Length: 541
Image 1 (cartoon, rainbow, N blue to C red):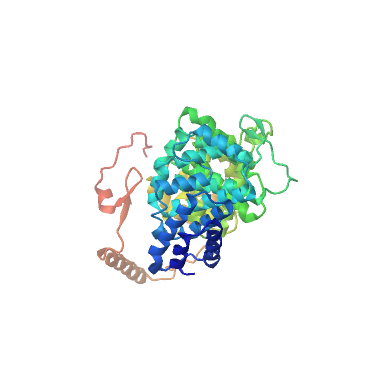
Image 2: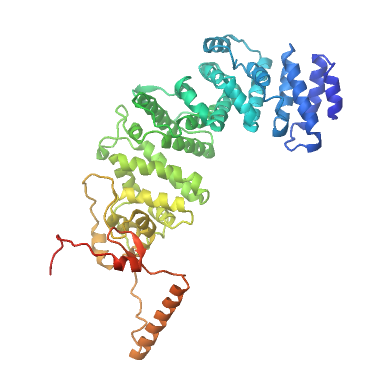
């Protein structure tokens, strides 16, 4: 459809004719996402013309069609200048029932509650919210105007009426709040302090997930026979979780925030126990829950296991480990996927690591599942299908972040004891962590752990003298290659090896290294020059 023709007709047409004209344009371009550059100025003029129509008193059906046109045009970030203005954003904010700008919070809440919207009027609100999502995402200028007109204030006023939302109104309200908080970090503090967005989003989650409290931070156990969470509820919950993630990112809070953080942790525990309509959706929900749990102070994670009403396992101090098991199951699924470890796996590994470091019962439970007492030590620790085998394999992953996170997780499960770690992984797999921590000479990390001792199995005690410390398993005896050589042949092979090392060293392909007294690596010449520390406590011969 010719844009010049549309523009000329829009100047004189009435509401009904505008509706028909733009409906045809929308049908032809509903699936257009890449636009021709030569018509850029015409599309920009169409944006302005549509905004002008929306500023007039036209019927909801015409408003909806105009907003659909604007939504299509907003896919092209180069034509958004007419919309990314104070006037444009206020028009759209008003049609989205956000009432940004000069109107106060009480008026916002009242108007949201009292507007009896017909189905057609509701579609206008939804289309306006969709337009705002596209425009805010694609236009930095629109993001700034959104801050200037306090669009986020209108969004928070809308959150207060979440119980009366229709699905799409709630979905795109939450999505717009997520986008604004993601793209404008400076807005996050205002959202938290002045407009109480963290509390409001928590209440949205509480309502959407149908949380019923039986204790201060304990939700009732979901009915195992209940139907899965409806897809629409799940969609809104995911948007709320993403917005909460932005608002809690790098925010430590104070004592006054402790209650709110614990409440969020309890809601996330409830979410971990719910089922959705598909396995993929459940995994997505658990992924968002893990990301948000990582933002909370680690001291709040006791809410995951402290359930006085439901009770727990006596061997773990009466703590309930159902949520921790869900996190372990999620971790193993992500390992088994075999791809995107950095974004998909490291968050849950980090969460379980910190939870184990600061909560004894969590560490003890995970240790029992991941590193049970060793019995069969004839197979290399990285070979096999157990969780331990999979994690040990990750210790030598090509991605530095992945291998460090996996190694740190196992190290914490071993109470940061080098000897315990080597028992389960072998020296070769653990070398990277030990170098990074300066623990090549052995010892412990800095965290203090309880004094409970792990008892070895009889099978391990019997096999221990025969375990190769480098590979971490009992190896079959290998034939000695020099056993049948003459002394002259041995001397020849030794000299050949020396020459090979010398050549590699001169070409800087290898560099002889030694270990300093503090356990860190250094060039061999430096370690030989370091004066040895006197050890008055060492045994004399």
